[in-house]
Length: 227
Image 1 (cartoon, helix red, strand yellow):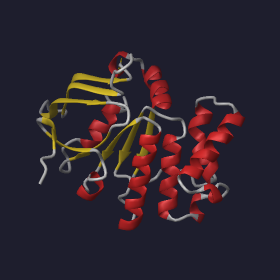
Image 2 (cartoon, helix red, strand yellow):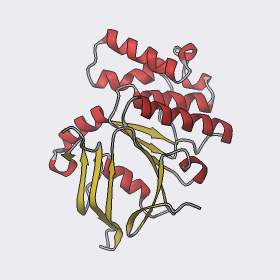
Image 3 (tube, helix red, strand yellow):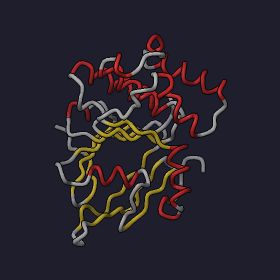
């Protein structure tokens, strides 16, 4: 539906196995082009929230709607297909395949979606150019710097033009200068693709690159007060 948010969280809640709330009453709307950061203390549930947003876990209360689709209403296979098409992931540990070249790593999401070889090649080349790695297309990750490998991960997360990008501490293994460059690249590419992005981070410096910062605690999400 035109005008609908890319992602909508409606009174989301998740409990520990003991029944004690991890968080509850969590609500958020993200429109196309929105890029937000979520911060919180260790153990508050940031990784659990990420799993809920990706449909890898089920909430105990409330709903997650991606493109207006209630993830809990889908079968496991349907969630997998939606995630493959509409979600891009960027992780702290990169998770690129070491035996594949940069272009082969970036092509993987398109292969899984059945995109024709000619279009795959065009889109991979354009994505590598966008992240400044066109000259490294045939090189394997072991022959690249940490920042370059993370740029491969960003290119792979964005090449299929996902509606939602989830970045989990994507610069935790990078030096400050490379981290700043990587975060700027991630933000710019999310905006260029008219998707929505969520950055999970402990770093206020990283969070400041987002349009808005939220803090997660047991009561839900709250915008970070300025100053």
